[in-house]
Image 1 (cartoon, rainbow, N blue to C red):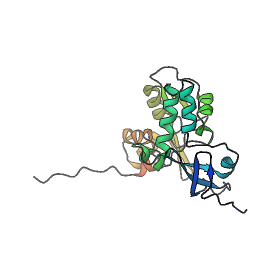
Image 2 (cartoon, rainbow, N blue to C red):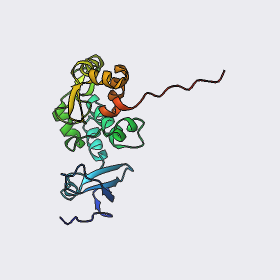
Image 3 (cartoon, rainbow, N blue to C red):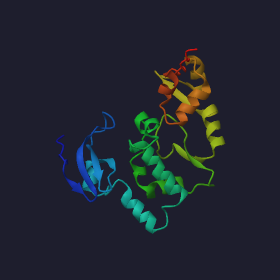
Image 4 (spheres, rainbow, N blue to C red):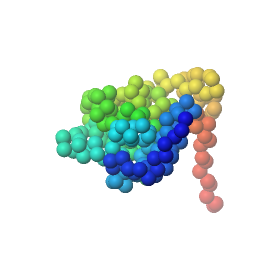
Length: 209
């Protein structure tokens, strides 16, 4: 299928600067790196750019939310933080999320869609929680939960599949000889489960007497 080169073209606030890799071999739709007028980078499908589904990196929606009183809500701040740590290499948490393969689904690039799917946070103490730490931020895999609920979810319900074998995370910890608290902590930070289990724990260097 012939791909239309969009490099150099502008779509509202987005300037296409290069081709982005496809998500998978089955994904045949072209994706593009775009620079927003606000200075941030983002990735969008060519068809979405041409149909004006994407007009900015999200700042356009942010301005609309600010005008409508949403920019200071917990839900909006959660959405903004989620996207920043998954998509902005300059964000302090990017290495543990975006660089580790944690993504935000295309639907949730829109704050309105995120708010519609997640609903309001029950209390200020609730934060967004990925039910399956091996998957990204997407409908059906996220919920509002307290830290205590998130910890219970990790310890008792998290299944991990490696090389075709599916087991509870605690059993994998015993298999690989890694402390379960270390594995849980890594996954909570956004590590891929297999990486969290197989990466050796760095030993502190002893100082010379």
